[in-house]
Image (cartoon, rainbow, N blue to C red):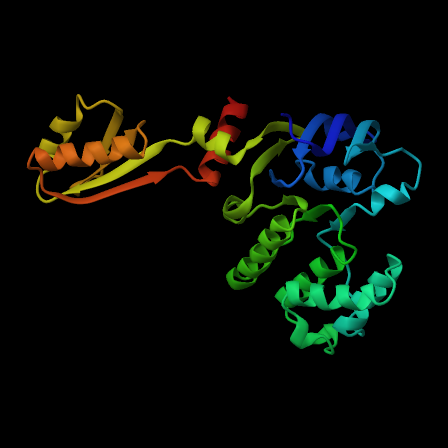
Length: 316
């Protein structure tokens, strides 16, 4: 059975004078997904998110949110209730307290008591700022301010969350805290589109990936499918002594596609097409051949390697 879509675009295009920022895009994002949008600066990611958030009108094409069409030149108030949008430059009001800031946006979304106060407490707990509820925003760290911005974005419990470079400029601990919140929101059933240049952050929690180049969506697939199709399995094997006996054993072993000896070492990198069971059989075979194996370490191409590989394929 086909998954229900949180987002669908048909022929979506945005042109600024002579520059086409988004080209004829057909995008589908299923409900409950965390969809990572990656690509270099100028690829069109921000323009796409702005159109999905109703902050920018398309030049041509159609956008459907939760199956309902966004109407151009209309305010779309009902559909906007579904959407939470965090741009990369959203301002904070430094002279407000954390509580007053969230309360202000809760009132804008017409949340009434007692629901409003309950929602504020829930969001403060979600973004780990309960202890800062009475603090001025000007006293918060960058990571806290970013979590507060996310809290403001989800105060009205949107079904769809659009995040534009939310971890940009954050230190590793703050990025991990932000990732943990995203995971909690996904577990709560929210659909999330997140753009980022930090590919390792997306790899950790995204279910699908879209790659944009010069306004085109050049790849859109589940992370699992991308790995199956483009990620190469490698095994690093180290010997006690010369690697020559290892090379001889590998030459005719099924699944071994090629190998490379690291100069000046006894370590060999093997391109291997087999799965986990085949890896175990290979290790067992090498040990049974009385080879002195010091290290046997399977690895796999990460998202960054896949991205670079796809970029090379597009350029060639």
